[in-house]
Length: 195
Image (cartoon, rainbow, N blue to C red; front, side):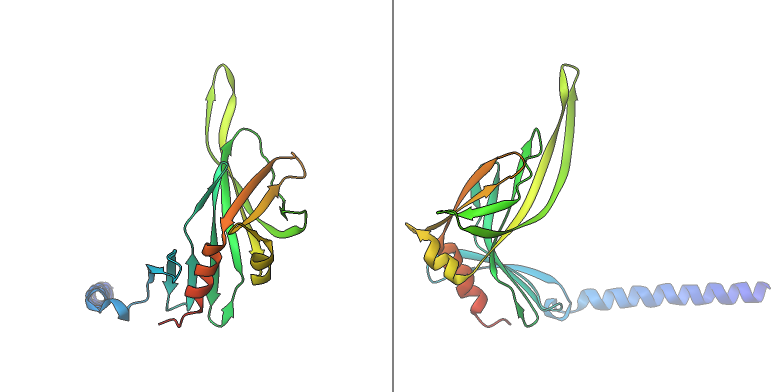
């Protein structure tokens, strides 16, 4: 019995030493030999800086233009490419506010035509309370709006695409105006050859 136990202890000791050697080997590998995500910035020909999040191992690349501030939130133009699947250019964003839920659920282009609005989730953040009032929580709502190149070309006015995000439940509305230069930059940089 004692012999069996000592043999197991020797195997565990060998396993730990092998694991330590493997870890030292992986750490000594050049950066391009290990699988990791990288973030870089690329300037498009129109001067807009596009952030590129690349994961070569997963063959996943996400391109994003700078954020544009909107009431209680932000939006940015992005595109996701996975393997040979080239996603559409979209506006992604979110709202951060307190009070009651607004339940944003649709979007319209200027003139009333619907835009393809996708709710990307709602969440409750930090809450606080006072003995003099009701509790208040930070609420977040995320969304995506898919756009075609034709949408950008035909909907642009004075170099911007205007979209109104709406809530059918609460009648809340928010206007966003995204520069067409952001769409152009994301399209250009995402079309370039990837490493």
